[in-house]
Length: 482
Ligand code: NDP
Image 1 (tube, rainbow, N blue to C red):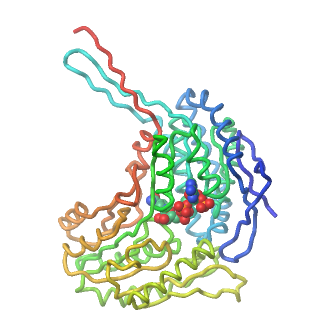
Image 2 (cartoon, helix red, strand yellow):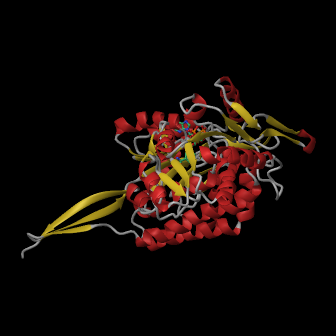
Image 3 (cartoon, rainbow, N blue to C red):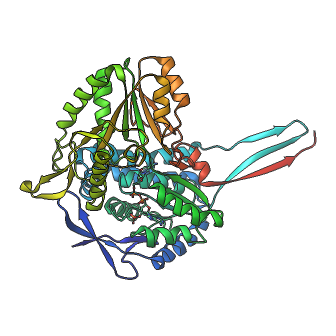
């Protein structure tokens, strides 16, 4: 069986302890490769390699760093189908989604930061008395990058690319649930001759590899994307060590639909924003709030469309719904459907596992689910489910929509549907979230800062802001005679 290897000091190597974890294919429920079950010894090796590489990588001309990143971007593009197939197999997501969205966007992360580092500038401030201050931005050292399973390569590259561009060396851990594209990335780095030790990828569990990275005294900067609870654990470890920390965490995003929206566009996009990647995108809308005058119409049309979203073989070109990422995750999602019923919700469609064993698919498929009749304060509407389950509820006016939208501990993203420009601005100002999409969803301009508020995270990724995060500012003040 294929063994995935760690990428440390420029080489693909076995874990020190020679232990492996089974890698399951979500669509079939079968083990198809083995993942290193690494531990602190492997992290130690990676830190040693990164430390040795840092003195020259941090001094490397930024055009040179830029050209390595561009080469990585191009190689991912060249091997796009291979990457997409691996991601679909590892994650259960439709191949079409992996090849149209995840992999091109991952390649773009490298090409964007290849270019951004060239244009990255620092500030200067002149004082009338005859002094000039400028901010020297220097690479920090070793960055620890930890990412989740839902958009495996995209989120991994979203951290690694700016960290490397800024002149840091990286010790990174992908989710052990979806390790394959990170492994292909390490092959690409070997292929393009990325200097050894600059990027190190250590596979394994969060409680072993992840915590060894966050606890390591020689890793002063941690960029983490994942669940809010894991973020809290990491913050507790990192805070007393005064590590620089960026946390991109969970969400419970509202989609707010006003009666004056462009109805057809809204309906089509709301289907996508609810169920793309089986609802396993942190930015998916899971609470749909609909103005009461169009609530019944929306409910009927939406449920009819959702019923057409039948899960199928992720490899098939026509499949729009694949498998959930693991059996444990599927059980969690189904437990929430049960909870929703106990809380008084009516399941309008879906809510059950789908049996595709006749097609040789014994994996973890769940029928997209719509639930109504729940109070915003119940657990189903307050806790992140992260699967193909949405609730719908009516609201009267803007005030009620905002109150409902802001009623959770999360603040990652929101979508507003209205043709009234002033209303869209009022809503954007009052919704407490890191991103508000008006009449669209998942449109991303990499120049803009990205991240959540409240318990959806601290810090910002994207744009030049993340290059600031990955550098240390030093003010230099020069006095001159007037
Ligand atoms: P987890 O928090 O379970 O895991 C994320 C990563 O952290 C994994 O690599 C995991 O390893 C690792 N990890 C787990 N425990 C520790 C630890 N103690 N120390 C260090 N690392 C650890 O999240 P999921 O992988 O389940 O991803 C889903 C979550 O990610 C959802 O809540 C979703 O909202 C959020 N997310 C947020 C995004 C954002 O931009 N705000 C974007 C995408 C997802 P292992 O796999 O072994 O557990």
